[in-house]
Amino acid sequence: GLFLLMKMPFLLISPKIVLERKIFNGDLYKREIVEILQKMGYRDIKSVNALNKIMEKMGLLIHYANDWVTADKGEKFSMWHKGVLNSDAWHPELVDEIIKYLKSC
Image: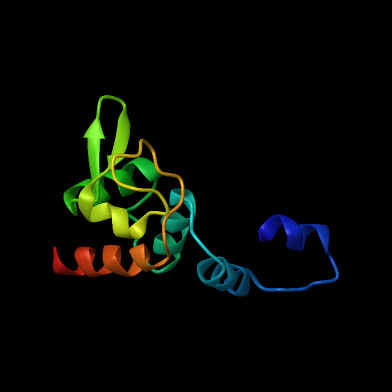
């Protein structure tokens, strides 16, 4: 994604388009989800840990010792199965679910 664009300086693409490309080109890292939510106005989500806590309240993650485990409910948003420690890739639809959750609080 972004690394490839940096290697091709002749491609002048705005950060918004790069962000949209990440959303439509596959799964997202939690850091990317935090950045997307911040750009959408959810500035109180300042870290992956804050995102993890929200996902825990949604029933998507379970805090286990010093790690986070994907719960049954979170399986549909992860490229991995339930029970995975520190899942590193999440489907873009998760952003919409988080926004729905935050609006309902």
